[in-house]
Image 1: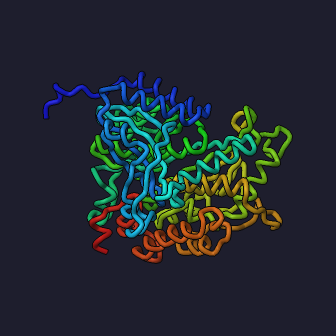
Image 2: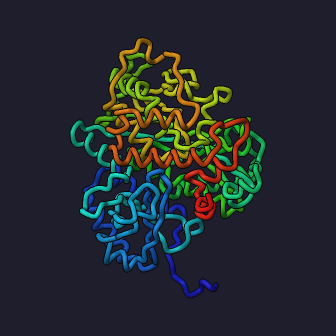
Image 3: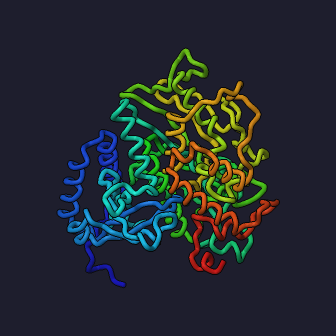
Length: 476
């Protein structure tokens, strides 16, 4: 179809980066919402080359949802964007289906036209109930409220950065076709840090890194990971909501770039038995003004008492929140001690088998790393579980809490039982949302063989929440 008559927005990568970094700084500076809204609406009205606005939100399991609104329609109706919540897993029943989207204008992105299509911009949104109240199953909104509460009450900024690993496999829709093929095909077998310039894995990593840079990610490093065909692309710290948004964008970018290359980017925690799985190590800290309050040059491992209390609360509730950090049947294959599995409920500066690690840091970078997080977890649920638990959870009186010989569940049934029985998870999510989430996880588990066994079963891929294939799910 000819494009010569079209005049849609297509900006160079350098210009995209400038726009996105400026928007990111506004968000960091907490520019008032009404001021940002006015600026964005004016931009959309004045920029005639934009045809549509892609609105992003996430379901209860963290699966990214995207709706394209015609720009002219959105300008007239941005305060009344309705959608059918009964079509979103874990949201509403058919009898109470209508929900609204409240645009978060601070979470606005200019995207490369060669990857996302010309004439489009992206903006995140929160789900709003019929009566205008925050929708309880929208976990992004819950994280925003937690972040705002601590900033307004204590002056705290909750910071996070994630190291998200994934695999690149040959062919399109490799996950959806797994029930037919029974295997994944590597694109590269080089391993850690080794991938020749121009080979498929390196070309993928380079392209994703370029797109991320253009979208204001502020990249740090990228490289192949330990397992064959595995990758990791690191980027800088951000305020907790922005950090979770970036996880969703990161995975979207990876999948989009892989598809354009005729491949599949997979974030299954353990798609291949016998090699290292993929994690989403979650680095967190809390700052007040310009001061990192996790840092204490005289403290144990140069961490403050405040930081160690944060750690102790996470260790106390480790089993209870495991299902929030490891959300799929497949995730429990990764918690295997033969492959650097972070399955020990303890804290350590050196042991990578510990649930919580204390990396080497300084006044600027002091942080703790929650290593037991799988890359297919809902990023907003991860942030809610880690920060609310670390700040408000209880601390066990158990001796040697940080060094005790305790282990995370090695299967989803035990994780779900601990999640359901805990009072703390009810405080985190509320009774209704907790029950919905547990039921979704139970349904996935019940579609799979109860025992994991020694090879990846078709069902744990076929019925995985991020691989959702409506046709196959409906045939169960």
